[in-house]
Amino acid sequence: MTVNYGSRRVVTGAHYGMRDWLSQRITAVLMALFTLVLLAQVLFGGPLGYDRWAGIFSAQWMKLLTFVVFISLGWHAWVGMRDIWMDYIKPAALRLVLQVATMVWLVGCMGWAVQVLWRL
Amino acid sequence: MRLVDAVKYRLPLAGVVSILHRASGAIMFGLLPLIIWLFDMSVTSEISFDVFKSAFVAGIGFVPGWLVKLLALALIWSFLHHFIAGVRHLWMDATHNVSKEFGRQSAVVTLVASGVLTVALGAKLFGLF
Image (cartoon, rainbow over all chains, first blue to last red; front, side, top):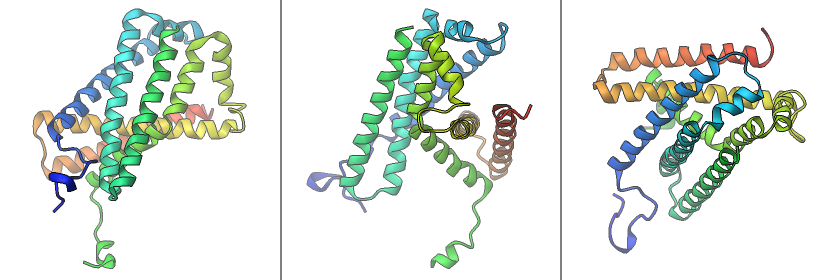
């Protein structure tokens, strides 16, 4: 069995299953609701050109909702990708590198997405 | 158990949905910059909106248009499968409906629904109708 305490403790494990299980589901529900809200706005309201598409995201409430969804996406993808690394990558050093790369990737993408959103 | 014995086991449909849920999530994670780039181009200005539209025809840089369409189709499938399989999870969490039979039936629904929608949207994307 994996040593899970002391100096030989696995530093790239999770150890907090319930919180991640719950956050995975809460972020999923938020993203699913966002999908329905966006879909409703796309489908109803006439022909979809640049003006209407950009207009959907320029409403302040939609900006806030989209922002929350970006954060949810980053968190959700973090939990999911970490699960993948934990299942398939056994050496701690490589797993740590991949986990850090995942964080950098996700935080970078979220920063970009927020920038796009907030200059509208 | 030897490997030759292991390959005799067939993955049940619920297992197929499970591994595809993981694969589709990984695809979307990997293509996240493309998603944000498309979002960026589509909302930033009318000029960038034209760049967004031409990405599916003329391509992006050295990436040809057909490949952009193919990547978009991969994203469409990934999103649909991940979404429906996720709702299936939430449904089982909420109702505790975790029988073997429900697992199989809901797996069939997930695979068929995501498959049919992907074909329909893919046909639209590639201009078949």
